[in-house]
Image 1: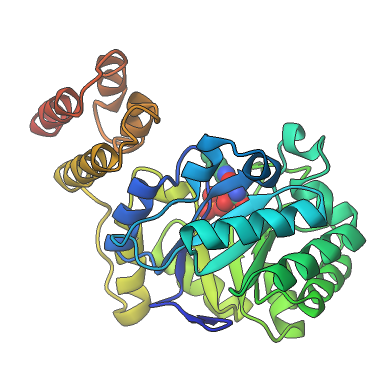
Image 2 (image 1 turned 180 degrees about the horizontal axis):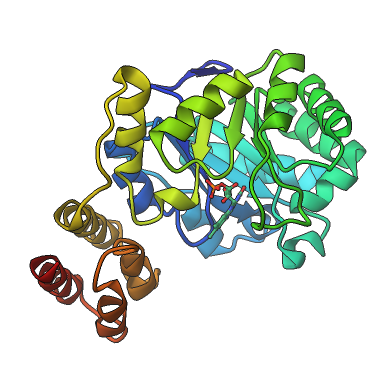
Length: 317
Ligand SMILES: Cc1cc2nc3c(=O)[nH]c(=O)nc-3n(C[C@H](O)[C@H](O)[C@H](O)COP(=O)(O)O)c2cc1C
């Protein structure tokens, strides 16, 4: 899959997720078959106000290879300036514009999915950011109820200079309820020439293949199903490439992914910045005994402590 001048190794992307897709987690997913990953959304105004945490979020390292930074905001000028600063500081290969966040806190500021209600502003943001950076600029949207209104917006964003568009098939009002409707991505793909990435509820290879076929999209973006299960990318890739159905990751496989993740957090100096208990808990979702594991790590501060409890969980499973 190609986005502007950037060639991705495949078509399975890790979704930007606040408090989830930190550098360590992105690296773990990339090593397990994710073709590309974005940072979580970064506040453009915070970048301009030299907020250290926000600048830190835009960092990558050679372990990751190419990566994308997602920014949010409502001012075309600020978004363009922030994108330019980030491009100079951390050299992402792609800058993505968040036009889909449904959180009332973000919408209240005029950013995220609120931008879809102000297409002139969103269009202007794309134009200004495209003018201010050398890398491709992409945009991630949700959908309106009305399919043709959604296609019309996507088409305007393409004309404004977006190099690709990700479509999460839910309205902002739906937040995360209901099911993603991939009809929107299909119609957008029919209309646009730039790559279109379908997003929403992709959890396994069979469904991934169905969405790719139904929408004709160039790529798929995976969010929640990748939380605590980075191996989802290699499983889906294997199914798409050769129809092989690997079983879900077992306890030992998840333990080794978690161990790698915790080591990388430490190596990148992120271990104090994430909630280790919450992040570790995702790796045991659906496993027998996961509830007591979650309880047992609430007050554990070290990765060794977490891993030894996970070893116990796997032995008992
Ligand atoms: C915890 C969490 C944080 C998220 N943060 C972001 C974000 O920073 N930027 C963004 O564009 N979408 C964000 N999303 C939305 C996801 O990128 C994705 O569009 C959504 O979860 C649907 O995909 P899925 O069904 O594969 O999870 C977030 C979702 C979750 C669950």
